[in-house]
Amino acid sequence: MTDGWFAGLDPDDDEAAVAAICEDSADEPAEWPRLAVDAGFVDDTDEYYDRLGAATTAAAEQAVQEREGADDRQLVHAVRSMADCERTANELAERVAEWGESRSADAGSGVEYARELARGDPEDPAGERVQSLAQRVVDLDEEADRLRAYIDRTAPEVAPNLAALAGPVLAARLVSLAGGLESLAKKPSGTVQVLGAEDALFAHLRGSAPSPKHGIIFTHEAVRGTHPDHRGSAARALAGKLTIAARIDHYSGDLRPDLQAELDERIETIQSRTGGDGA
Amino acid sequence: MTLPDGVERRDFDGETGLATRGEPVYGEATDGAWRRWDPDRSKLGAMLALGMETGLTGGETVLYLGAAAGTTVSHVADFAGPTYAVEFAPRPVRDLLDAAAPRPNLFPLLKDAREPDSYAHVVEPVDVLVQDVATRGQALVANRNARFLRPDGRLLLSIKARSEDVTADPAAVFEDVLTTLEERYEIEASESLTPHHDDHLGVVARPRRDGTF
Image (cartoon, rainbow over all chains, first blue to last red; front, side, top):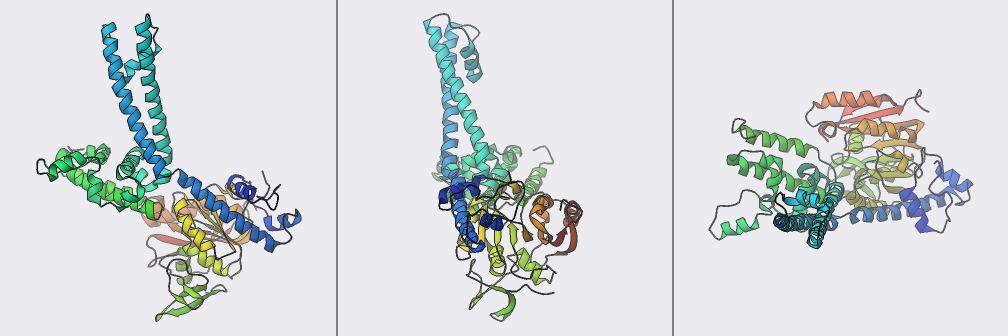
């Protein structure tokens, strides 16, 4: 397509102009101001630039809103829903397995067993119920997968640096635990380090337990892949970088690929303390 | 070297610096209608401050890729003609919209500079292509956008070494980027932007005549 954004537009239809700026495309640029005058869309190029200014501004405002509509609130709901689907699928799968055991000697366990049962051929009314229940487990498990795919897609839009450093799902979990990207960006690194370990933290504050070294960030390879003796250091280093990433994402939005290299370097130093057997 | 019309060296609190005339955007120092163009916050400002021959005269049509919050592009719009500002990240575009509000010749576009098709229906052929995008493949972005540049136009490019490869030696990165750039451009000048920006190279280039033009 090689038409300008104004092609076929009613000059008074602002909404259509915004849609054209946002959604249309062209292979090559052209002398749009002159062509718009030739086409009778405007009387002169001054008027063209006035209209262009109004249309691009309105389009950018709308596009910003849409893109941020894939915002941190949506991400928080998605990651919480994913956790609920996974947990419920596992709970129901246990129930299915227990029921299955009473009916067959070679019953398996978990979501996989439910998947097996759901494909089966029930022999009696009770079997129909088990199969139907197993199908719910499969549905929930598949919904969790779809939510994970949604998170993989949107977390990098909401928090590009955080998602790059933590992976989309951990990034979404952190945003969710903090209650939003803004509140995550405002948390000190020491809090980010133990997000998700609140029970252990409060037990520690009551004086009945050692301080937790890490919360949900334990799922990150930088912590999990480090020898237990040095996980505290690794968690502290990781939390520091994640906090910086969240702040950049919230306050500026530009990409800082150096963060990853800085983190890798730091983690390598920490892991080398154990002479390599920690990794 | 000559500064474009509309850009002057002026005194701000005893310090001489570049300045343009327009509404302040990022808390910069002002002197009457003039506002300081801080070379430490703007790669193009640094290129001008360092005396690179940019060929800018004032009044040009400009396509600016990587406009971010509008710090630099607001100064460009102060002295240039129609100025198209492309930025991909939604959050800085909010600030860009504020910078564009008092500037009728500044057109904000929330688009991906790696996909010029998505704004070629809006952007006209331009005299100057300014690029300051912090992504991998900066030369590729410039090459893809060469279609917007008039045959006698100029590319004013800032290359950030760390965006290409954080571990590699910046000099080697710059050489790679310039080699790729030469598929579509003839390099006229390149200069380090130190001390204003570390590990950045400022480049002035013209579209190749044997290219697709």
